[in-house]
Amino acid sequence: MREICGYTVEEYIHLIESFHGYLAPGLLIGGFMIDEATRELPEGEIFDAICETRVCLPDAVQILTPCTVGNGWLKIFDFGRFAVTVFQKNTGDGLRVFVDAQKLAQWGEIDGWFLKKTARKEQNTELLIEQIKQADTTILSRQKVRIKEEHLKKQKTGAVGICPICGESYPTRDGEMCRSCAGGCPYVMLADKE
Image (spheres, rainbow, N blue to C red):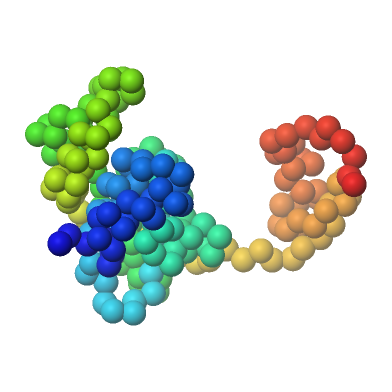
């Protein structure tokens, strides 16, 4: 029976639903990608991961590996490409796995969904999931890569100061005030602090 990183496909589907909220096709494909990318790692190897999209794939990495955004072992470079690279922390040597658009033609439902040829309301989700299971890794390609030196070093927080505007802590490498007070805040305050 096919396994994805030690889970049956059905167990992995349950993990997807629990973590992501629903069975997202991208997470199912992501599971096959992570399984493929980690398969050749030596037992006990410490590794990091890079996702080239922020959509779905980072969740597959976080479900199936110890790499998370929070621990810094998962980095996201949002190039909009459905690709993941798993690499050795020390050497940067790794394997990049991606959905190969040239291999989708024989999988009509996957092709229509992945390349946005089929409107969402016209998609047959059940058939899509079944085709993803059948396609397995046949829609993927692999490339050996080496991560650039500047991306191997974990960025440290460094010195911490108190922002003179909001009074909250922030990394002083950001300048005279926190990035939020410098104009990077994504919200407007509606009430004072409680």
